[in-house]
Image (cartoon, rainbow, N blue to C red; front, side):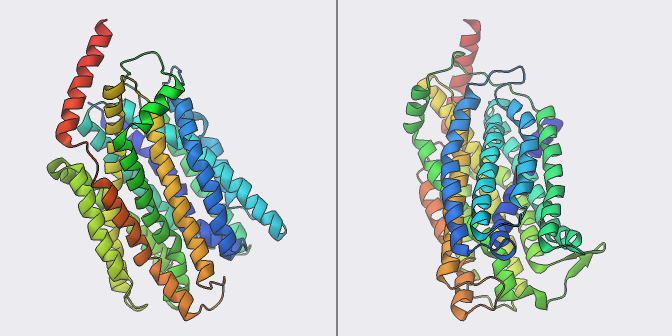
Length: 460
């Protein structure tokens, strides 16, 4: 039985990752176009190139982590040693040196590529940690719930406070200085949270085979793992849905809602803009979805819960298109409902990846936890790559011009980013997960069989 402190410690890891991940998803596009001065098309291409490369870097990290042996285990050392580089490179990503246009493009490519690589280096082992903390399916569901709850708490804090901090640090200085200093604060929090994750967690599950299999055998097992392929497709589609909505939100409020025409909302002397409140409320609603995921999935199954949540999100997203700029109550209400649906699916995905590792071990006798979990990170990066690239390219296609009054065509395109375009992702995700074969009953048999084999291996 895993104690509360360790569950919280595991949650700290994704709380840290998600603080930066949400800044990338919600603010990096508009940072590059409206603050750093790059064109939307250039940014879209950069996101595709860097994230595609980084998507294929994830399995490399997974393979290396699987072959790591230390007194702290396979995966925890990466959390310890990469926390500070994660924070420092994050700061550099949001730094704006005085360079030519070509120089700025090169700088953006280098810093963002490094950021995504160090993100893989720490997040793939962190994700894999779930598979070796416990072999119990329900315990994994609970750990996934803690993970995603803390992830959304971190995202909520980052999205709620980022622009107020940027405005505060920018007073008397440049806008660029304000953005960088706000990221410095977030980065310090991230490093501390990763240290807490390392300190409070433990690795317990040992493979049946103590000797590590050859890499070609691991890859062969992975490519023949049907549930893994299904989750890969579902994960990519779900992240396309998320990345398009998040990446276009600030544009939606800046150019369609025109949030500067509304008074800022102040709490405890801190002024919040509408877009920040919208994003933060979405994260709070994600937490509610995470909390609901475990009890609902334990009752009706992970597959049915996932399909139902994504089907509802599809319908709500399509309706979102017809809201007028003055329908703020409906806009915020639908953000809450869609975010509850989105929040419920990700703990299910992480738990199902752990099930895939068990399925593969039973089928082949070999356990490649890091490689299997790296695919979840790969699907995340790949989904964001597609969604972010589409956002940049379509902004350029719709005629977007930074810091200017937009045409009717551009405004219509920006509205589609929060409605029809993400709905395509949810529909594809439902299709993929409908094919997923590992039911709760089947996993009970797999878990019991593996337990017997592990006990026999220990005796021998």
